[in-house]
Length: 303
Image (cartoon, rainbow, N blue to C red; front, side):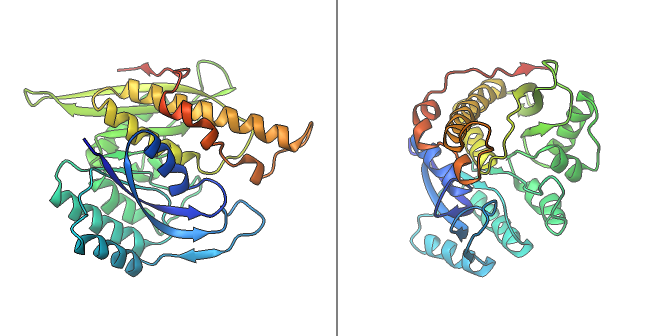
């Protein structure tokens, strides 16, 4: 059965970020993807120079109205990432709510991008409007702490933060990175996930997992967008098994990043740090790993 995603994210001519990071991998996995580009830039802003245009909230509304007028606004998923301003984000919420009224089973996957230092003007909209309508969210530690008002210093804290996020709305929460110490040593970072679902008798069951992820000495752009897209795909295939969905998602990330860093170092040459253009994700070259990833990252069930 056809599964269709509305992806509202940024677009770049050169490289992989936003919709460029999400669309191809989802299509490879059999999803139809309708993309609305929140910005259209020449390249991501980590380059020395960039040019482009920004879509306003009104322009977003016009595009959505065009889809509605043709009665082709039936979606199974909505996927969003980085957003520049509050009015645009509020329009996204309006669209998600309308689409959910049309299809109560629609799943909204949101990467609540507030950065590692915060975009405070967006914070109240994410907390009060976006997170409550989201079904799956992928914050980093800073974003999870900001949204809940609770600091994470232990694994127990992280579990409590994920429970607080569940209480705000989403049934699936993955904290994509944290400062918690890894049991495998300081060359790894820790990610955590939590998924709740309702049993047939009406009671709730929550599965929580921990993933130790190898650190890479490089700055990538577009990895968060790829991660959210892959979590969408693999939770679709394993809707009640967060461990398996995370195994697949984190393994895809491992393969893509490993291939990208190897190629970047090859281009940069011995002893030289790769540049942003050299660190663009090797997406097309990773097609086979996206379709059928060799599971090399395994989550541990913690409760």
